[in-house]
Image (cartoon, rainbow, N blue to C red):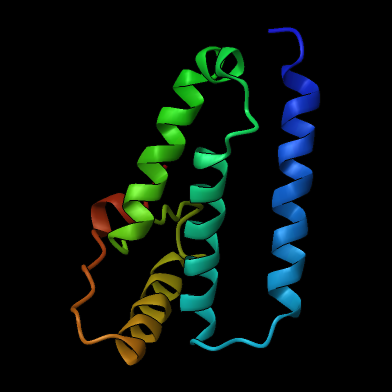
Length: 122
């Protein structure tokens, strides 16, 4: 695995440079759409980067597989959020606010939260 550290630092630097450039760009889509598009483009660029040697790709095969799965979810518009914490601290209020925000930007219905999974009394 020798040589992976410098490569990951180089890749992280490139992605962060892209993130800062996107933050300074004039958005052409709603903010959430712009961020999603940027994430898709960044992951695609990383996965398709011909400068990554085959030996490094082989050593990082599991990580590249996870990145491909994340990219597929983003391209489908899939997002999973886990909210946890003590009882009565606002988890459901946060989930409801996110759902309202999503519904105001989309015509697809949001999935309801499960009260059994959103809080557990101890």
